[in-house]
Image (tube, rainbow, N blue to C red):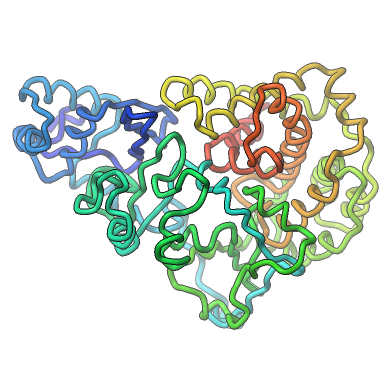
Length: 487
């Protein structure tokens, strides 16, 4: 078969995410191509045709299956439609092998090296929870309205449909409420449809309908553990929080909330096996082209977390980045963090410009299919507007000279990131530090932009969390990868 020929039994490729959205009463399915970053909008009828292409049917079978769902089409028209999708790289054959590692948490990454004989068995590693923090959920559902994908395993999806069969009329029909996490075949996880950017199970007043009827255990695991993060650094499992919901920052310094983890759990082996525990690399990147031993980074990170926070956290992060690139993970670098020079607009400007480019592109894409009430659409517009405003050097200079509006929030943000090793990832540490400084500066400008737009959403109460959720949850953080590759 020619590599360009339509597969005999096509299916949506594993690198394509199909997400169903209801905007008002109009159904739209958006195909997200993870390889190209492109989006394709389908109508309800087109989605029935695509979903019938699950790798088990030829074109005639797809036409018959779609007709049973009321989507009638002729074979030549469907053949041409599928050929267009295939030419765009969105289809694959059942035997391509692309799905070999599809459900592994670290798909595409090299296998970790064998554990050294003297390394503590991973299941025995102690759980080290972010100290002096407990969570107060405000019940307004901000986190249920900001993410593009909310995952359910098969048991969770069946329970949700049984508890609320009226939601999207999905009681007896899984496919009415859910799409596969990837591609179009039955798989280990499904994604619930969104209504105006909100989880379909979120009630109007911001309460989870599943929680209200069945208690917290009725929610999917990801919702029950949010915003907790888990990272195995070879010495312990660091348990921290993703600062991506207003509740997290509003809880900082406020005792009496819910613990991040059941205090009876003491070691990694006590955790639910379905929890994704990230693994700190053996040789993390600390600067472009420079790595360090994992144990060295862990020890240095502890010293940094114990250091006196600077008056301006963003300036401290930028100064620390330069110091790491100059001298590595030293005490001198930490001293530069504690007593930073003022952050210069010329140094920060390129980062803000790159983020503006990414946010402006996403805002244009969102305007084509997201509804006006969608929080993700509005937040992207606010970030694009804030970064555009900060392109004015005088305005940026004035913002950097002014005291940070929420210094305690910024310090907690950094403390949570350091405890959870959230600065270690695909980017070298020095670039990740500059990225976080840029995020904090954007968050400082966001309230003025949101107020100018007449926004009164409770998510706006904590702009740092809103920026964090948008960058990770909607791909805006790719701007930092572009910066890393810039000459």
